[in-house]
Figure 1 (cartoon, rainbow, N blue to C red):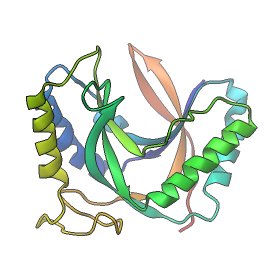
Figure 2 (cartoon, rainbow, N blue to C red):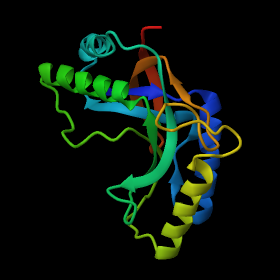
Figure 3 (cartoon, helix red, strand yellow):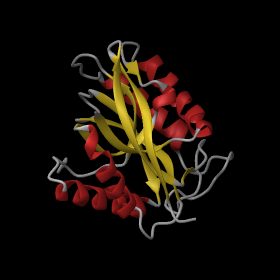
Figure 4 (tube, one colour):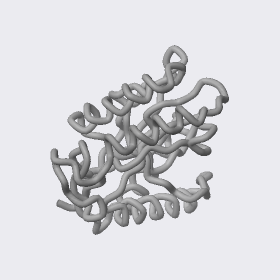
Length: 207
């Protein structure tokens, strides 16, 4: 089974992120948008492992959320992997109460190491992947500028719609806070060249 651990994005927030995806598609017509229904905030990609390890992974997640209460994060900027100049993935970064998010990620990583599973040792950047490139390409300076303008128009503080502080973990720009109440273990199932996501377990945070 192909496992990953992630935070699911509520439907109302997915609809807001869809506006960003549509704008990115206008700027980069050849980009492949992530299915809006599958948007999530990854904590750890576990990869292909025996089905028998599922209960161990659930225990890792349960330990990772111990003592962590519900919190919020907010879409805040657009960037890319490995960088925005030559991206294979375009993503929306989040701000807000990421100290709790970073703590969960670190605990999950420690738990995976105890199970002798491979972990990604690169610096963790909380993000929501919204689009991918099927082949290598380089952004022109004009398209980079258009993406920067998209960041400003969607994520700038002080919008009249909400006007909350980004750092305080409240809404700003055009987006409502994403309320995190649980963490999930997913199975990624190949299907026609794409993947469907099946929820295997949901572990609630402290209320």
